[in-house]
Amino acid sequence: MRRQFVVIGLGRFGTSVAKTLSDLGHDVLAMDKNEHAVHALMNDVTQAVKADGREEETLRALGVRNFDVAIVAMGDDLEANILITLMLKEMGIPMVVAKAQSTQHGKVLEKIGADQIIYPEQDMGIRLANNLIRSNVLDFIELSQDYSIFEIAASTRFLKKSIGELDLRAAYGINVMAVKKKGGEIVVAPGPAYIIEDKDVLVIVSSKNALSKLPD
Amino acid sequence: MRRQFVVIGLGRFGTSVAKTLSDLGHDVLAMDKNEHAVHALMNDVTQAVKADGREEETLRALGVRNFDVAIVAMGDDLEANILITLMLKEMGIPMVVAKAQSTQHGKVLEKIGADQIIYPEQDMGIRLANNLIRSNVLDFIELSQDYSIFEIAASTRFLKKSIGELDLRAAYGINVMAVKKKGGEIVVAPGPAYIIEDKDVLVIVSSKNALSKLPD
Ligand SMILES: Nc1ncnc2c1ncn2[C@@H]1O[C@H](COP(=O)(O)OP(=O)(O)OP(=O)(O)O)[C@@H](O)[C@H]1O
Ligand SMILES: Nc1ncnc2c1ncn2[C@@H]1O[C@H](COP(=O)(O)OP(=O)(O)OP(=O)(O)O)[C@@H](O)[C@H]1O
Ligand SMILES: [Ca+2]
Ligand SMILES: [Ca+2]
Ligand SMILES: [Ca+2]
Ligand SMILES: [Ca+2]
Image (cartoon, rainbow over all chains, first blue to last red; front, top):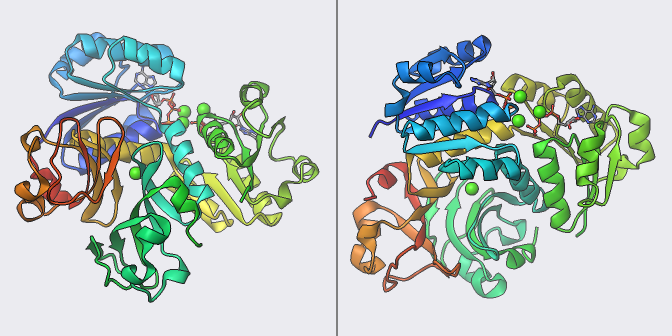
């Protein structure tokens, strides 16, 4: 289903959200008070408008109240960020996502009705730190305090051995859920007979403790 | 192994990287030219210093050349960002990660030897857009152009049915790799007898196409 999104504030974050939604086939109205920001995105979205998001009249004229989702993406101007979020919720937009600068700011946004609050810089900081301390971890999803899904480069010590032979579950308490092969092929739920090859990336469910015991 | 990290530029991203590394038990030297930024992090890291990262003498005096990883995290001042990255590589730090403002900036960083280039705002923009268009997707890891791992809220239509009965693999081409239960418990590799309960979150491997065919 094609949905209508409005993105207000076209910094790096807002621009990236707007472009991606548009690439994924959705209608995107992008707005910034700065002409350059609007210009840069003009050919990538349904409509790009130079306007201050605080102008209620402009939002009404553009029919924003009928949109499905609004993303309030400016950072430095907290007042504008909060005011616009409040206005969009009062207009009745069912899903308003706001970018917060700090947890304090996030609490205010929550109180005034933001449906989702996002901290792009802080979240990526946490992700990078986690990736850096485990040099073989390429990506992860946290499942719980203890468990995560990790995408890891297979240890050279695993090369040419089968999953059954390595007995990863018993030896390390990890479960291999998929293998991403050099050419891009994905092997889902590889069985014990699967032999690990050079450049294989393993997708595993593992406790954080178990992971640190894996050989490099 | 406890490793030594230096983070230069304590905006939201840099602060978050420094704090997380420190929480994970590593040595962190955090540096910013702005006193307030340094002060805010003082009690969270091994050492917090007010200094301009461009001052080579200061970096030497702090023994930065012996660190394992450096993160160059300032955004707006491209000149400082590039100069500092270059200096750190010339000092022989094996792993220098730099935050880029744009792909153009990223190319320069690559040329001067940055080992990893990160675009926090752009990456989170892509992540948010993907999460928004699939309202039941909570998180994901892209495995290939076609396949991803998705963390999804189980459809209400799946409630009280077993994985075998739903035959998710044959019906939708998805594989359930783990279930995250309401209380936080993780069921790894649930068998066909597993019965889906209220508030279950399913971790699946699926093609993007298959996912869009799942009931809400
Ligand atoms: N009231 C407003 N109406 C429309 N656009 C606005 C308004 N206030 C700020 N903006 C725009 O929002 C954009 C992003 O703002 P800002 O630079 O403060 O955010 P940021 O957090 O630094 O962004 P990022 O880190 O994603 O690049 C800017 O292009 C700015 O012109
Ligand atoms: N040469 C420098 N040496 C040390 N610190 C610096 C230097 N240049 C900038 N900084 C610091 O880097 C921090 C982040 O810079 P800036 O605000 O430009 O980045 P940003 O991309 O907006 O950050 P974020 O989006 O993560 O909040 C600031 O606290 C600033 O004082
Ligand atoms: Ca900015
Ligand atoms: Ca930013
Ligand atoms: Ca992820
Ligand atoms: Ca800033």
